[in-house]
Length: 188
Length: 188
DNA sequence: GCCTCCATGTAATTGGTTACATGATTCT
DNA sequence: AGAATCATGTAACCAATTACATGGAGGC
Image (cartoon, rainbow over all chains, first blue to last red; front, side, top):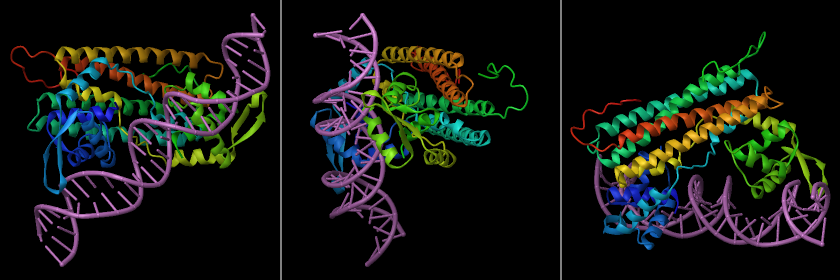
């Protein structure tokens, strides 16, 4: 079972949705958590149905099929949550350029990091807006909305921390003019 | 060009290495940045050589082949760094379980988050040790080591922020006993 | 002589993206 | 009538992991 499958089970546990609905949700509301294209979603739904973890409850116009999570599906998600450790692959493609910055002139490295700082601040702003939206939405306070709020808070703290880090990193690529002094953490 | 290719170009720009050396480096020193198995590295080296971005400079015992980055390779990395924006896929598999926590009893959700906090604190400790090692290594202060130190600092700040966040998140899953009070950010 | 580590490769499978392909309904 | 959007699917390709496969060199 992949993360995508658990996300699908979770979403179909809240309310019945079609593959099309799920695709739109990934595009519009879940970009901060997980993404998937319709070409991946449709086959996945078929497989989950084969396994009896979701079932189709409605046939709408234009061949629309609406699914919801079964008891077996719920049990499977709960089992996974109880057994899963928080370990994650620390693979972070955003740090690859940083690792290579020594190949540039220091001024260019600082320029890269300045863009990095701006990027994280923009992301942080967007997350604050997302928090706002969820707080004022009709189902605000509901258990799923509460979980989503906790996710958004994690992302916000991450972006804020990275913005701060980028500012600090710029100082690490300063031109050394005179004596380089003992450089024990001026910030961190 | 993939992140892996740029990482390889960067490592082979520091000093000549074989596929075997690179494999060991990924396993032992680069787990915080990027990982790759030998089965991916060997074909990739062949492709980079075909493109003239690296070349083989030595033939050792047991068929050992040592490569280093060419001028063309260096030019390519530099071009990429200047043109690359800091955008990254915000896909974070570690947040998927959080998104699903509303499916558990609150006590179980808190237990998950407690494990999460512990995990991030352990990671943070290991990163501090890695910082220690790099600070006391013979090539400490060299440009590549400096870039790596900046990477490690990013990872450390990330893990610390997530540990703090997990502590806060536990309070979000408190049992509501009496009046739930206005819950405007008691921490964040 | 045997075990460990050095050293390189290929094949099969998985998860995901991009591109291809089709058709129904609704709105103007 | 035409455009936009709803709605579902398949095929080709890519990056990465797991498994398969082989052999040389050095230490005990």
